[in-house]
Length: 110
Image 1 (cartoon, helix red, strand yellow):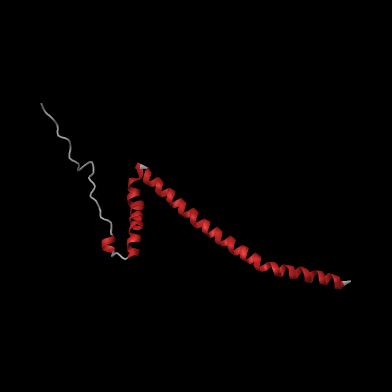
Image 2 (cartoon, rainbow, N blue to C red; image 1 turned 120 degrees about the vertical axis):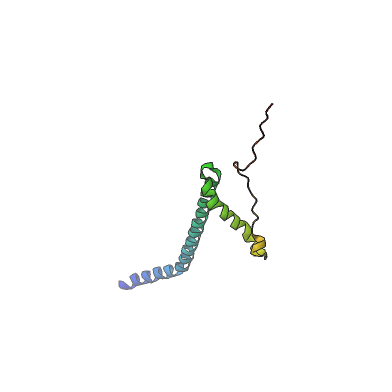
């Protein structure tokens, strides 16, 4: 009476042994996909925060401190990969004239 039961257990263990590699591949794939999605969602979150800082005029100081250096770094990275020197790859700053230094319109006196 114990012999048929042991044969059933042996057949079940053979079936399980055959599915273990498939389960390992499925778990590895699931882990890889979840980490990839985590990185993608994090990048999208950073992009949305950067967009909000860029668009909101009240956050001018934060834009100059956070978004502008990151974008300058991203723009110089391809030049550095091509082989340009860091000095020639540095972005040229254009002088911005603020409202305080802009010449005021001449007043006409008649």
